[in-house]
Amino acid sequence: MTLSPAPLFADLAEAPAQTRAWWVDASDGLRLRVMHAPSQGARGTVLLFPGRTEYVEKYGRAAAVLAQAGYDTLAIDWRGQGLAGRMLDEPRTGHVDVFEDYQADVAALVAAADELGVPGPRHLIGHSMGGCIGLRALMGGLDVRSAVFTGPMWGIRLGHVMRPAAWALSRLSKPLGMSHRFAPGTGAMPYVAASAFADNTLTRDPEMWDYMRRQVMAHPELQLGGPSLNWLHEALAETRHLARQPSPPVPCICYTGTNERIVDVTRIRDRMDRWPQGRLEMVAAGEHELMMEIPATRDRVFAGMVDLFDANSGDQSLTA
Image (cartoon, rainbow, N blue to C red; front, side, top):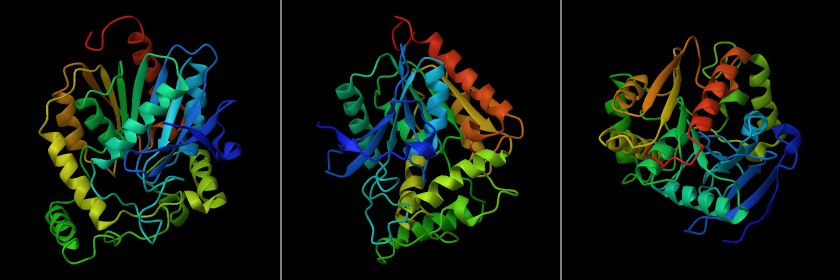
């Protein structure tokens, strides 16, 4: 793999000094972007898997917290979002051909980590869709000592009536030539650009809401709207498949807000009940973006992350 310098909107990211971005290519040739945020004297590296619609700048502040705690961060723009290659004529459609394609992006991130020579051991943070991608990667043997998930997309929150309708419509969209179209009820505008802070589903912190909104308004090329019907079908199929698999032998904490309104909390509880080295932490009144919640919530979540990473950064084996 050959890394080449990529743009980074450092003023909006508020990441640690010396943070850099790089272009990397997935095995199918699609161009991706990774961000490396260093920590002086780091004792490990966090592989940060963002959610759907997200991009590396959104995690600049998170990387700064992790750097202060002694960890490098390596984050990625998944295919079809951020500055990574987009695949449809309407670039703001969240799309993937096959959900397992994201594992090619994981492989590219790991290869970038190797080429950059980031310090080990490695740990994982997976948020929302990144939690789904991360769980599949762990099941496939991703070499990390521990993992943290926040609001992981191990199921999509849908009503009893909407779920069979979502399956049927998304399944039929491909033979009908409509799989590239937005899923019903969604469109091209990003959620933070189209919605008001009041009763939003992401955060109770108006300053963090403004942080996210400033980024996508200043750089529209980062914007992503609703998912395609194909993405919806692939996500439903992937989460159903993962729900049937045993949990990986990796120490884990999963943080989920009690006011979570985007992902399926029932699926999260079921998974964590079956994770021998894992525990579920329900965050009172927390919304979906727990790393971007009110300060007290952020502090609790990051402190728990760092404690887990510290406890698993010695010489013990992966399964210890």
